[in-house]
Image (cartoon, rainbow, N blue to C red; front, top):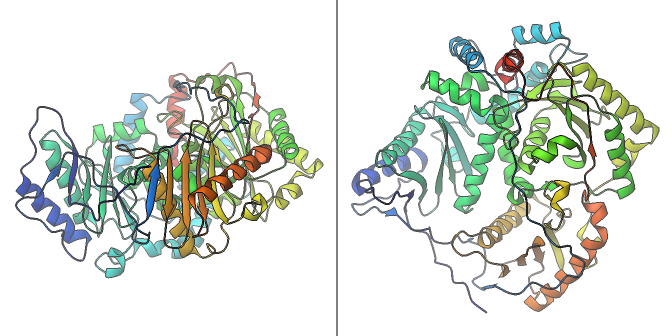
Amino acid sequence: MERDNHQEGETQGVKICHPPSESNPPADTLATSLSLLGNHMFPEPVESNDSATVDKEEPADLHLPDVAAQEQSDDVEPIPNPDERQETEETENSERCLDNESNETAEHVTQEAATDTSQSDSGEFVVTVLAKAKLEEQGIGVKGRSSPLLEAGTQEAPAFMTNREEDVTSDSWRQHRKHVFVLSEAGKPIYSRYGSEEALSSTMGVMMALVSFVQSGDNIIRSVYSELHTVVFLQKGPLVLVCVSSSRQSEEQLRAELLYVYYQIISMLTQASISRIFEHKKNYDLRRLLAGSEKILDGLLNLVDSDPSFLLTAIHCLPLASSLRDSLSLILQKAITPNLVFSILVAKNQLLTIVQEKTVIEDARLEPADVHLLLNLIGASSAFQAGEIWTPICLPLFNPDCYFYAYISYLDPPECTVCLLLLSTDKEAFYAVADCKRKIEEAMVAQNSLSLIAKAHSYSVSQVGVSDLRHFMYKPFDVPDTYRQLTQFTSPEMEAPYSSEEEKMRLLDLYRYMHSRIHSSTRPLKLIYHVAERETLLAWVTSKFELYTCFSPLVTKACAITAITKLLRWIKKEEDRLFIRYPPKYSTTPNPSKSSRGGKSDQQDSTENGFLTLL
């Protein structure tokens, strides 16, 4: 047994990727820049001296302020589990181009967008008069109401604008748990989680100055550590994302959250469009194209803070009888049309079932992060409850440069808990896809599926039958890769003593701490037994699963391992109800006049019908 001692506190400094033959930036100039950033962000400036360091090694392990000193970390042999299947290696995803955009079209859109200065922030996606007329002319878009996106944005604007109007000089603004900023390489503000971008332009300018200064020495700034805050930088193409956090999450976890923000932006504009826009005009204000999308980014960051699926990079499935899930899958399989790629059924922000086009999943895999972005998009506003929505959406991990066309409709108004998403590669397929929705709706009504779904709920930890077990998160790895399976996890409802939002966040912070130790880049562990102030936790990762458990505070390690053995048996018994074990497939006949890659005219239409037009 090896006891893992934590270093108390963290050293200040900048973590930098070093090329082998380049020198570091002068320490005194770097310290001056850090002091400027500290003056902008924190009530007390970041302390600096002539010996400010540029760290070449990994930062000290993070620690939580409320955990007890006793902690033991063991590398042990996995407990045998005879029921588990042999894991197979995951094959690499191959790129699949769905609808590429031409360079000439992108330049046209760039010039048009660069001259459009009249776009206002409505607090929601704004469908402009031109875009609305274009959609009405093509017979696509919102059915039954002129502009539910605009109407919903107007209704929800007062509550939404609170964060945007927050005084950035106030103590309350500085005391937020986590700030996120997005800016361009030219230092132009693009997004801030709290406060207006205009009021924070000088702060973002200092951030960009830090990035540029370190880059001048052929280095990359990755993070800055102070006593109470961690500042993490992520540069993706022409965009720079910065997180200032007091949450004691690891640098890797904060960088993963910034990556989600980047992916959400890409899902609206595509990576290729953003790159060409800034190639044409480096100081372009991207807010012109993202006007009204701040609420989607805000909603994403709120989900990242409260939903463990982002931490585990996995999808949470709604527990459902396997017979009902199979019948829903069969309904989706029968309602198809050419160029329909994914049929996704969601209830209560959890996945019910997903059907994938056979030839597509042979080439590429739908990643959990792409599904997270879709769920955040439909959950960010009540506008999607207004009717049938037809909108372009990019799935960054599937293909960051092309659009799908998403049909989004709720099947159970006015409750609006069951949502259908149909993704096609054909921008003209609105009526054909809407007919698929009609068939799905009729079949679900005939089989009384909606009422059965309404009765489905997450389960209580007491149903597991393991004493002293308060909560757990289980992520299996033992699904045959030939099924191109989405990574999933299961977790019970958080119950007493984790009923309040404060206690839920505290437990999630403990899980994040355990996760950072398990996946440490310098010292990864297989098994951690951790005694905290109010509970005992055990984290365990094998080739078959990843598991995080929370017990009452007096549980010993031996008792915890015994309890986990019982828990694994229960999960194995219930796995058909908890997970989508073998996702169904369907085959569609491609439209002869279309191709998944598209010709030049198709590429131009793709850009004109993209978020660049709708925003």
